[in-house]
Length: 170
Image 1 (cartoon, rainbow, N blue to C red):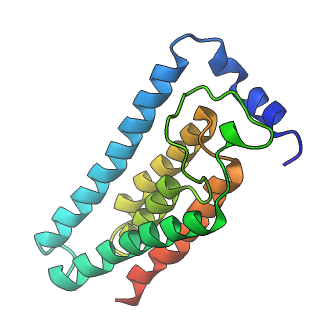
Image 2: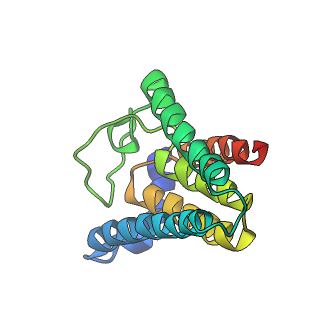
């Protein structure tokens, strides 16, 4: 993207005015990630008690896609090796300081959230919808924190959604 630092600054100008922005973004990132996990856990519990047919087959179909997504995204990141925005050729000044410098594309958080959402779609839209909303929120939080480029988030969402469709095969 041409002049990414200016694009990032434009989208984070409001947050930069607040001295607690870093703490708030860290807390929201944590809370949203936990909420996605709790919705997923609720779905797994509903499967385990037999609400959605055969518990073993259904558990397998809902657990497999996010696990495959995690592995595929991790291997992709190790292959493509795109640096995070704050250490790229045109570095940004991120709102949230990060010590870990792992590759950025695709976003593993977003990919797993969308894989979980699509997997839960095979059971109930009411379980999946909050995960999709939280996945979008998490992606945005990771962007404004300075961890990801927008393409990382779109790539993660696309890979997660695509691999999440494995749940419909069972």
